[in-house]
Image (cartoon, rainbow, N blue to C red; front, side, top):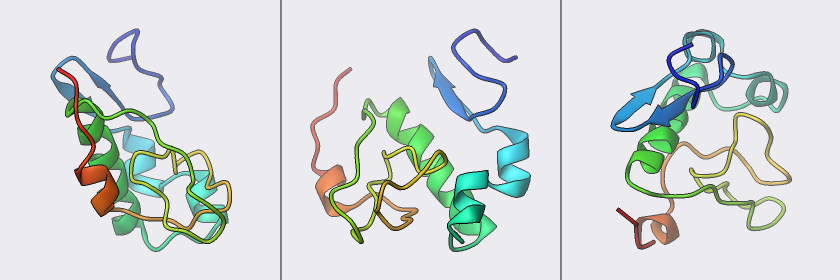
Length: 100
């Protein structure tokens, strides 16, 4: 219970802090494991990149189509909607304007 802005189940960003859920860090998520996500290390890269993306002002993204790499800002921990797991920002995400 880090903050009312954080769930006890998922990682999040609150203000200037990025909070990574310890259970997800140790075991990844059920969606990641069920879809045979790359590795726990891959999950860790993805969740840190995703939450830091929020810190940079990026919003959630959705799957670009079946079989395509998921944007790192997609909530891959919860499911893929036809995309494949991806731990790193795609070039299209790196060029997205941010708000502050």
